[in-house]
Amino acid sequence: QIQLIESGGGSVQIGGSLTLSCAASGRPFTNYVVGWFRRAPGKEREFVASASVRGSTTSYSDSVRGRFTISRDNSKNTLSLKMHSLQVEDTAVYYCAAAIASRGWPVTLEYEYENWGQGTQVTVSS
Image 1: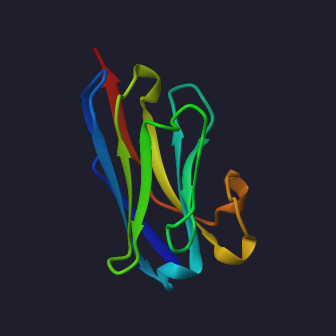
Image 2 (image 1 turned 120 degrees about the horizontal axis):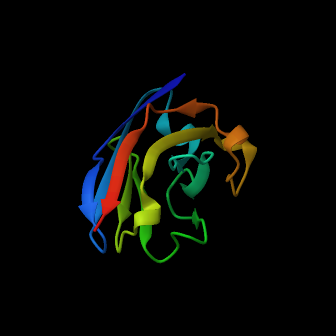
């Protein structure tokens, strides 16, 4: 199976930027649609963004569209999430995930993803 490890989390001021990374290993990276989810304190995990197997097609939740950018580098088996104009509401543990490409597109539901990273904390404050 594929293994995923997130990194890049940290603390940032409101309006700041942060980039998260996810390294994949195991099964061929291009067999998967990849995505980012987050779990805020006291809330359930929610969809953030996803990218097709080549990264040419992306999907975003309404709350992050225009501020976050998901991308993947299949030559390096990596996934990233560039976050800008961060808000307090963006504070959460962020998870990268992978779903078998045969599921189709878009892939935005938690249950569709079978592979998950351990999560990385992002804290936004004033």
